[in-house]
Image (cartoon, rainbow, N blue to C red; front, side, top):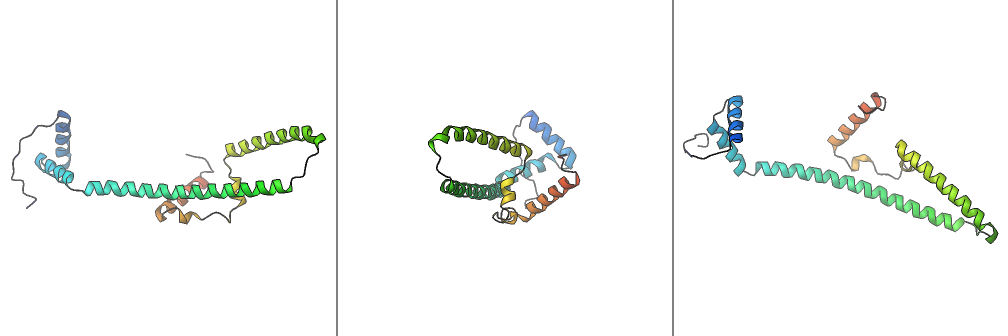
Length: 167
């Protein structure tokens, strides 16, 4: 019978563990022998290892789904950008030698303007790429579990009710 504590052992433990054992025995109302027996049973069983492994696997699953989503977005961006570059170079006119210097100057100013606009959008936190192509992106249901979706909806509704401020 596992409930009967009939084997006596003598061993030494550190003062800190002795204090923890004494405190736990007082708060739970169990004997020190019972607590040591339960701790040894837990140590010899694989239940704690299985629980820890299940939590690790759940976290890895979430990370893999997020990684897949980011990879999907990145691939979409690269394909869109390459199509744009192909279109741009196909339709760009030949520049006469006389206008090369003026076009280079104009190109540098346009590039600086582009970087300024891009940095302003990034600082603001807007995502123009996703806003421009909503029909291309895959839904969140393919990347989140049901309980994660509920939590995400709850967080979004909290953000909307708080006026967009982070609390």
